[in-house]
View 1 (cartoon, rainbow, N blue to C red):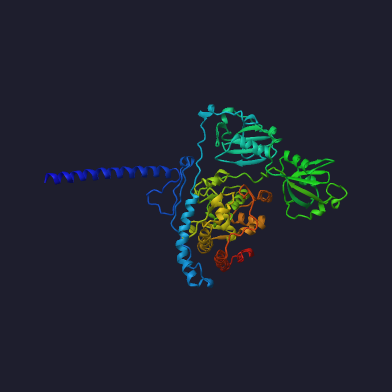
View 2: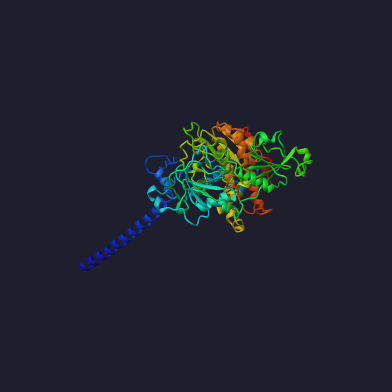
Length: 577
């Protein structure tokens, strides 16, 4: 009996030790996982909020790189998605692309999409004044440090060009950017903002007031709050690599009075494009206009809008004063100088009474539309998500809580009744699904500015991506047409082709008024900083015939739904290939 009891006691001791070991391992693994995940997101608390309500983000948390995941309930596309599509009556396709399949599939895709959007690149804390002594104007900076100056955001002295990099800004980066654009001075503020110009600010400040550490360079000063650390970069300009050459804009009919139209001019016997461009760059004007021996500098205006170009042959004898249609035409070039009449932006001073969405399928040009809206209205746009890359490049509304109502509109890719009815109105941006799918695939594998590699396109991930995302393109539009309270439908292709008229429609829909000169400035800066660079593949066709058949059916469905709601149908280029 005693022997049996001893055996039982031995087994229990082993079991206790095993349970203790497993419990400890489980707690350690959970702690490591929790530490890792809290660096990226704030989990929603158990305070009774519904699943579709996002938690507000405290300012302190925003600074250390914590972001609101904004996890929502799965949205349900309209069960009438495929009504009228006789081509899908085959048994094999009917089961796979039925409304029930679309509901479950698109819910999974939206969850996957949210996880992709919740990547966050944490920002560094601005260095406090107490640490100012540890910062220095390091010797490796080739420019000459001119001092700390006061900066008035309403009337900037260095207003030739503006750049943001809220993660990697350095003194050298700012100097090189200004030097490449032929500016004399580079000024840094807030640790992350770079301003260029040819005139030194008038009001000097105390050196200790420039106390913000550069976001991308520890120990270096990048201005402060309303303070600029200014460097002279003229000595860099000779060896600086030009970001871009002078761009030929075209041949245009000259205005009746060029002196009244353009604020600066030069008369030179042997005038060249380089001479005129250099002269206008020093004067901080984005346009260089040449008529014979005359060089004029200025901006696009109502008098000279650059919309109606003329045949280049009419400007072929520009340097011969007796030709070129007796001086009625002129050559126009874009200088490296940025048009800054529309670059100032801010948050709304009072909360917006109307909650407006800027909705689109991923890859439909939402970031570009935000760039246009921000520069046209002068107000930041918000985002349902947080994209660190966009925030670091100047989209400051990314960090603002999406329900703060301090932004002019809010970017979203969501669909479904609950998500849509949260907004009072929406601009629905639609793009050709072929282009949208390729753009989103590029973004997924190469970021906002790159292109996916041949290996990505030829992998099995591309067919899976098309099969999954094509249905989302259709259900996104159909859901907004069904549940949206007040819609303005904008086709990406129309916006690209007729920028000013379409942008005016969008601005009026947002209940804003803007000047003609500001719209012309937007047109002059239409690409922004998010146009994909690099070599495109010529005659590249990634879509198989099976993919085309699938996408074409969705195109016909969406076109029919738009016309049924008295909206203009899809543009002709959407017509099935």
